[in-house]
Image: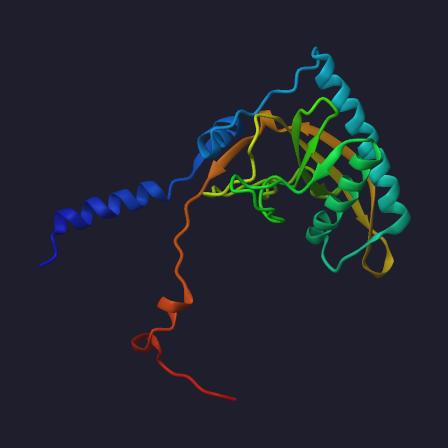
Length: 216
């Protein structure tokens, strides 16, 4: 027999789960996931200012290279994947060690936050997340920054987390170029959490669930 009181409590818990959590500070998220601190950019810190000045040159050179070569993609939201390599090449040009971040276990993962890790000559680590926007999407409330917790996360150092956003536009034949950039301090980012329910094919295609099927 089903315990109605238990069912009601469970329904109440699920309803609470479906209520998104809003405005969670990004540094708190990172520290909770991997016990690493997000360092706030300090304009009065000479080392921080030096890194920012280098990133400004990196952003400029990245834009120049993108506009020379163009990025061919059918959809605008795929352009960011190509931009990462341009940024890495630019960081190396400016004498910085730059690479895809390794996880806590030492694996290199191309997906997930953050996109790039770079190291200054004094051995200080920093992270970059590459983003794209356009004139029509810069003020959009659609989701544009996200990360998922992982048991093997890619943040392994206390560091400043930068976001570099590139303004893109489309030329003919699905060629994308850029006409601007913005460098942000991720310390100031606020995130929302929305739970989801999911399943898998093993449970979806169980024989007793199939109403009809055919082979072509």
